[in-house]
Length: 181
Image (cartoon, rainbow, N blue to C red; front, side):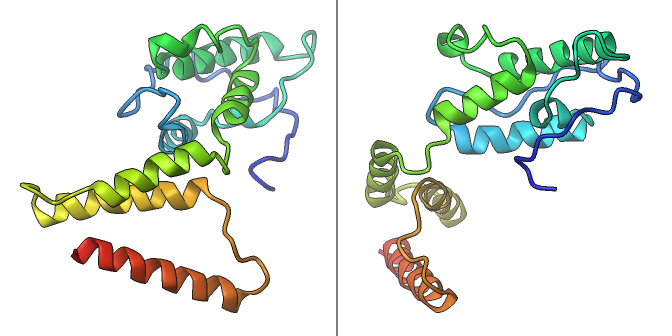
């Protein structure tokens, strides 16, 4: 089953989140850090056995188990909102379910062809300097930028595996030169 395939929830599953602790990731969503933030949130949410609340459609309001599902969904909703910067919470807090909130965050921030974000990341990757950083820290930071760049832009070659591999090799060589410089 794919990540985006929606299925009805299992209403026989007992409400499990009511007494669960809050979920906190390393940083709050600010609009510029969505790819890593969403990955960390999925890991935390999935680790609590609640991934279905952001993946599946809710049950019918009068169906068996709906009340327990709704209480769990409110907990899930609070986990997501608690990990969003205060300045942008009001733009998203009006959604009725955790899935609706999550889907809107995806639509808003997961634009894989955001030219401005790609420019910003490329500029940071070009201008980053090792300076006083140890080699491991410098590499970790520049590699993180490269990963975000790859995540945000469409791959220019789609015709065949050979072309894609050639592009990746070329891109990695350019990055190696930047790292060594």
